[in-house]
Image (cartoon, helix red, strand yellow):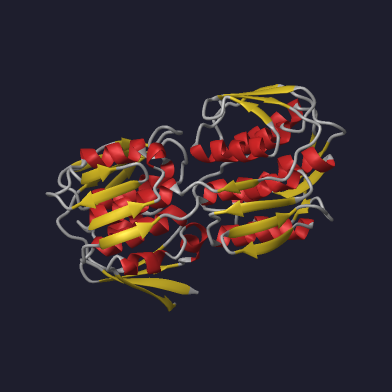
Length: 417
């Protein structure tokens, strides 16, 4: 098992290019199941989760061809409608094949999902919505078993704006008979990117980017080409890396329009930023000032940036109060940040961060994807050497992280643990 070693205390300097968004690529890959034919996807990031998704789709009969600038996906012949436990256990997004399989084949058997240990994240909203569309759903031996003769349009009101739930129901609705209305839909940009791909396939969708999606089902869809949007969380992570090291970094191909909440909070800390169309220039300023954040569904501050922001605030002047409203177990990185000298006290869903002048390098253990990133950031800002163990979490969501940071001047490398 690998570990990442960081000799910290060095300001970052240079340019970094943001990769395609994992959380857009995964549902879009699943959407290719909706119709037979050759799809072309570009800006697909090379990540462990993408490789897992490709294995899962290959197990269903999908074939892949690497292109110079992307990936050709041949969804012509499906040989299975089952997503087995071995392929689903490490990646929660694997549940996204449920809606497309039911829509195209009328049946699916999908293992209950795994992924990061940041909370229960039940899929009951997915299943309730599918049942409202006429799907018979049963849970047996750790699997969801779903079947339907023909999906029927329905009005679905989500109790919570679940991202994967919205995506699953949106994909299913494209081939349903009649109109489907999804209320309280997730508004995340990755949902909109999926909707744009579905439109390119011939789906009839209104309300993209809002909390009400209206889908008029069609008899069939056609293969399409699509460029995956840039990863807003990766861009935010490099923004935090520049901030915690007091570096001078230019972040290119950044989805600036989807980073408003993150950029606004970093500006509140006193960070010097120049924001252009798809570029963020970070310049060193004075000492950072502690700022409060509260995670919310988009367009609020993203839960996927909470850990990275907390690491940055651990070296800011004053006190920050960080409130987590999305996942109940998303403070698991706090104990590891404390090992580096961070002053953080957790009470319920709030963490009080009192900034310290320095952090000290130490061995730490990653618990999930974004926690891993926060520990790397803390290591970059710490004095001495930090070892981050269990970095397979990082490989799920960050493309060439240590290489990109090295190109910015970080003293970071990977070793066998």
